[in-house]
Length: 248
Image (cartoon, rainbow, N blue to C red; front, side):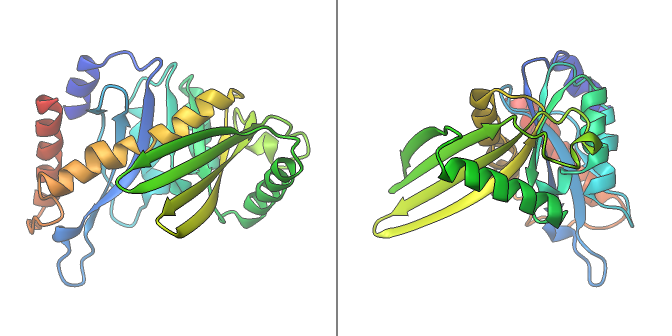
């Protein structure tokens, strides 16, 4: 019912970024019983929650995300997900839905990660791959991000295993707070080749954290809620998301 209502209000996701991420309702932990995990889809431009779903017992986000995406008409959207969502079945589900994807890549699977990391670090380091740079100043810190996207992936042995894979991307983030400077690099699989769109999508993925999860915890007190009997944790989580959508 929630999904039918949410998608009726935003029936066309073409041009939208749909962020997919998991969130644990931490206050629902009860002794040996773990806290209830949820996965959610969030339309970033509209700031609209689309489809929250509890992860089934003895399951995980890897199997829950395709079920979640199957509830949505994704045609023309760009789906972004963190490393948990970087799975071949999830990429296939997105492509089957006539959408694009940007999937964060971490060290699982390690061989793919190492191959992409080595390739992109070398290309950027030797100046063969231009980077798009952005600079942000906020809350006493400076953040510099350099986005690089390469469609030269004929060398990637596993390319045929990933539906729609067109490019691999790298984001180098440098944070300056006073005299302290820290740098990290993240790597991505991408189903399109536009560097500008890649940069916007990577940055936009934080919308589900900042505009949904943070609000649910800080304003709605979700993690502090100790309801745990039967399905109360899942039901109240759904009601909070209904309220957040109505407010917006």
